Image 1 (cartoon, one colour):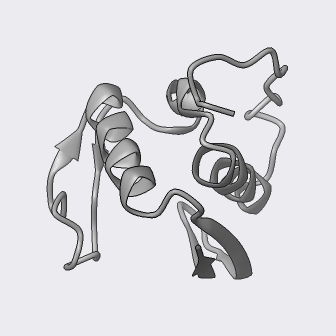
Image 2 (cartoon, rainbow, N blue to C red; image 1 turned 180 degrees about the vertical axis):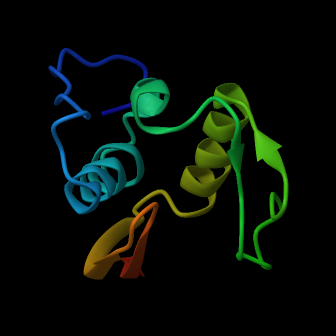
Image 3 (cartoon, rainbow, N blue to C red; image 1 turned 30 degrees about the horizontal axis):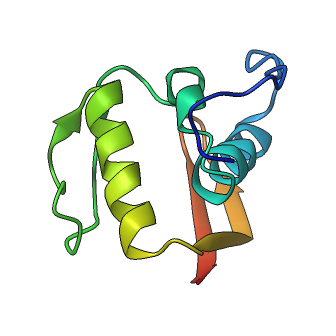
Length: 102
């Protein structure tokens, strides 16, 4: 999918647990490149933390800037795919470990 349109019915994010929501985000946004769904998964002011190799480290991104970040990554790694290895939920966040291929 080119990330410009989707007929997919989005899940009710209020009924999903944090781990399921994050896995769905990684699958839909990063693996399937459904960038039109960014507003469903990403807060309108998204701050990049703890990725010192990321040019957006420490910056707060709008939805359009987050999409720009995605397109930059997809251009560099067009076959990129994330596999979630583990997920650890805490009260207000989820930590994941993943393997990226492509």
